Amino acid sequence: MRTGVFGGSFDPVHNAHLAIAERALAAGSLDRLLFMPVHAQPFKRGAGLSAGAQRMDMLRLAIGKDARFGTTDTELARGGVSYTIDSLRAIRDDGADRGEIFFLLGADMLLMLEKWYASEELLREFSFIAAQRPGCDAGDVRLCVAGLRRRYGTRVILMENAPMDISASEIRKRVRTGESIEGLVPASVGEYIYERGLYKL
Image 1 (cartoon, one colour):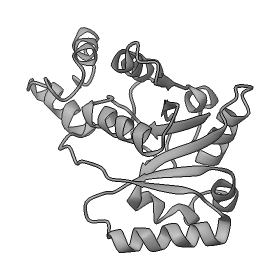
Image 2 (tube, one colour):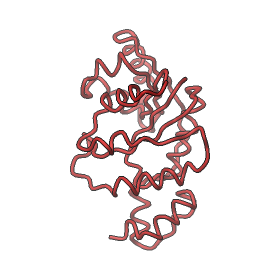
Image 3 (spheres, rainbow, N blue to C red):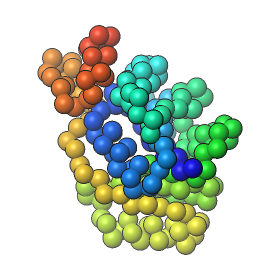
Image 4 (cartoon, rainbow, N blue to C red):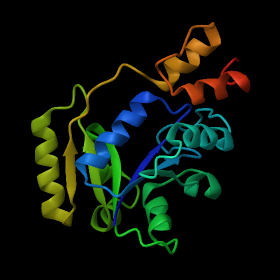
């Protein structure tokens, strides 16, 4: 069993998130990918997020009945600042046979992994799928992957990422200003946003 974990604010989940998830499934030959909305991120303290229940609702709507995808409320249920090592251990140890767990992240974040909380344990215990990012030197990324493998035995799969000009902040701004978000989010997510008046303020 190979399980991917895709963490983020997902405020709201949008079509670029879903495209990245599809690519990660293929790149990592994953059996399943779990979307994990954060409660609070250590690198974005003070950033206000929509209620966790609303973000989970939108993720479930976006996934629909696609059995390849799921959600986990590991970080929402814990509360407080979320550290990746704690979350991945909780998912691994929840009693389900997860097998190998791959954490999905951008190549820019991969270059910073050794500065993360409990990084050595994280790099020894889990695997990673890194999506290339614009402005991130491919040579630097390959050197980083080789170094992590040598120092910690870390498995890292590099994934090409077709850039999509979509961001959650842009979607929130469009809702506030009355612009269309059609084509940026799944239709079911768009309906949810408007029905509940999200992002109006």
